[in-house]
Length: 284
Image (cartoon, one colour):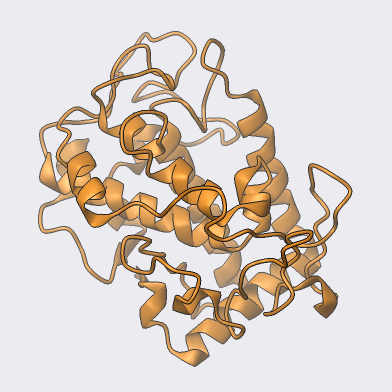
């Protein structure tokens, strides 16, 4: 069984195996296809029309499935690799371990945001940004420039206390539900704020161009698992018959074989190094 670990606890060997697998996926073109998938959905998901990956109840199961596809691809390169998560309530500064030169590299230079160190720096010749929103082919970051700070433990606790999964109108305007509070369109602005804090490609639809995307979403996924454990009788909503969104038993594009109901129990696929105390399976 795959165990997803806190990135801060990885050994140097585990860091190296993870980054090497990423570079191999990039070399083969598999990585860029994942970036294309994400960008296509973030551009087409709207509050008033069909929405699947963002601004909708299926934000969490969609990204859980997307991360599973990525992790499976990593493990096809190196079976020892699993997807680490970035707990941004604890590792909150530009000096945190994930930004080290032997891992993800640090922030970008002031004049153009270009990341100059680490395995994903443009100068290495191994991380050309091919799926992009402008003409720049290098990885960009502006750590901490876009917002005052990353979400706090207190803000996360407040969101985890919300007892209803989601509410009408099932988009970015939904109030009083866990999903939208976590996604960041309302309330404490958790997930969205982290994208903006990293900056560069992470603040655009091609955010998976930055490898930190996967570690950020692995933590968002972990928070969903923690919420499920705290609220075992509050399942995925809406259940059925809702226009423009993915109901519990609906198939999620671009996959033709998976529904939110299939993804409610993460333990069918992986566990975390610190597991929620209660069973998520009761969400089904």
